[in-house]
Figure 1 (tube, rainbow over the protein chains, first blue to last red):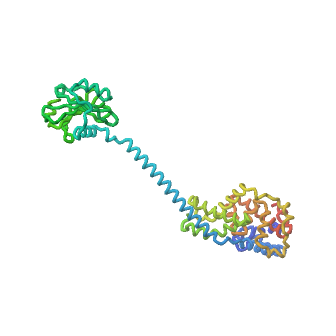
Figure 2: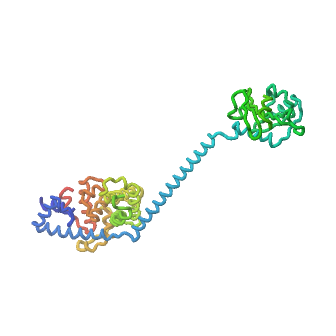
Figure 3: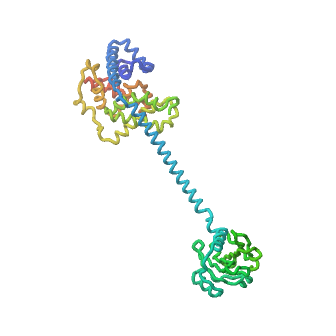
Amino acid sequence: MNCDEAKTILLLYRPGTADAEDPDVAEALALAEREGELKEWQVIHCARQAALRGTFHQIAAPAGLKEQIISEQAAQERMRVWRKQVALTAVAAVLLLMAFGSFWYSRPAPEDTLVIYQNQMAGVALRGYAMDVVTNDPATIRAYLAQNHAPADFILPAPLQQAVLAGCAVENWQGVKVAMVCFRTRQAPPEVTSDLWLFIVDRKSVRKSPAGTAPQLSKINRLTTATWTQGDQLYFLGTAGDMQTLQQYL
Amino acid sequence: MAEGMDFDSLVARYYEPLYQFAFSLTRDEADACDLVQQSFCIWANKGHQLRDLTKVKTWLFTTLHREFLSACRKRTRFPHVELEHAAGDLPVVTPPSVNQLDTAQVLLALAQLDEVYQAPVALFYLQDYSYNEIASILEVPLGTVKSRLARGLERLHQLLTGEKNTTLKQNNL
């Protein structure tokens, strides 16, 4: 190693660092110890390097930079948490809405089941009603019902055909017309105009309608009732009398 | 977050050397602050990806340098000026007064160096990093770092003192 090569190496030498552990640097430093001119160059060079290094270390960070970085990060963290919460809330809300919508649209509508229909029609019979037509003429009744878009082509069981017709009315069920045919039984007191009622409706408008023509007997509210289907229609017959009375007309 | 060191401690420990490095590159307080803040912000978001937590400091310096280069690419206010063209505008400091240099003069001279020399020279003076660490921060080979440092220091010295050092030329560096 000559002096120029040593200068090249020592150009990057920083006293007081691990640079001296490098074999080339160590050799160059050893040469500088022996060569006066090189030693003189190295001393001046190191002094300059120290001065330059000092100027770099004089760079001072502005006051408050550390606090600004920390507070900014804390604010961003809060914002991140807030955004996350908002996003989670939004997702939860959407899921809740979807679940609610799914439940709402998939659940059976309680209003269109047979039980509700029976209760509603029994309520009509029990709470009082006004017959649209008061007559004992079957043809007049059918004509009126047909004219008002209620089922008019109903089929009466043979015993019921023997009952005394009192009149009819048109009721409403979920936007569907229901024919209400009123009869008067032999047991009816004189002041009662009708005590036996037959409701006829399109069977498709009532879910869980009984499948067959055999009447299903039940007590609905204070009415003794029989329910059956025939053709496209659902029949619901009710009376304030007992089961025996009802069965006389089935 | 580095094991055993939360964000606040990390900032307290490294913001100053990072600022010194950033300022030596940008020579602008606001830009330097932005670079430091951006580096810590990136650490907060991506620091967990660093597996070797002993390299946090190197990671931060590398990130800052990348951000600086990225900003330089976006801006046009860092025109490249050839040393030979700018030399006439620089204050020539005589050798005996090198000890009286202030930071502004040195950074002004540093700014006249080719961009590839600025970061290694700044790290050389600022952090006492080994050449391997400087190579790691700047993501260049060790030999390149040494070469750039030699040329950068030579030219910085030349700018500040007006002396023509022929050491490198003689040794084909």
